[in-house]
Figure 1 (cartoon, rainbow, N blue to C red):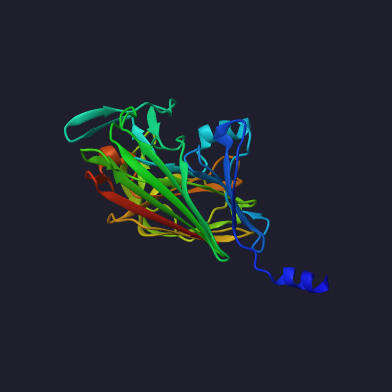
Figure 2: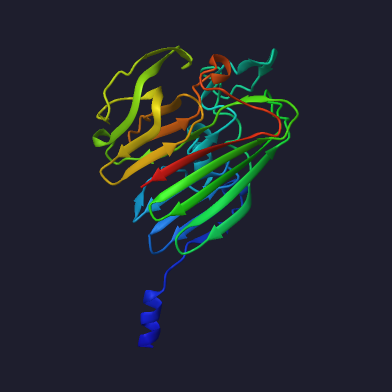
Length: 317
């Protein structure tokens, strides 16, 4: 028995991937874990494949929703970890033009009369594939749109792959144009990161300029950065978009440090910060384009038929 015990202690525990179902399908989960690393991650396929938990060594890094109706209600207003496609942030009045044709999106930020955060944040993704080994795990989620979305009549397919290793989570986002015409787009990610003491937490990134916004929170011009980085947050309130010179940002708290690299094929990349009134977390949102990009064209991309675009986010913790 002693030899069996010793053998068990020396065995390497692999990553595991489990799917749990809920009476409400929106709350179904894909759980990735590793007991040796004390790592746990929870992804909700029917909430746009958004990750709602990432914890390592009993330290909760991502601020997500609870697995109940209260969690769903929160997600509708907070968009925890949602993917922002075909445009991140806001579209003024839900209106834009592309190739001499006007489009009207459903307004979902009624107090400011904007369309907010694209339209895949509440779509149901299927699990396309999954892999586990001693050193890593990955899950690929897929979604296909037939082009019937209000204000965005362009068919496309999306794959989102989460990959986990000892101190890294990587997200690969791939979109394919399956329609017959080109379409405009941008991509963003909307995670909140926990901070028990936000005031002593520090953000660091490389940017010279940020946007001045109008009464609808729509960029109207650029202005030099209002503070120096790295910035200890203190009582600073942020709801700002920055034009970054490098696709990289770090966040340091009393409990953990993270670094996020996000690739971008545009000359600049964009970074949105938001500090909720609760002062217990911060939204750090990497984006390929600016808010209202379908109108101001800042970082806006165009995808031709049968072409695809890949975007990667690497989170080191």
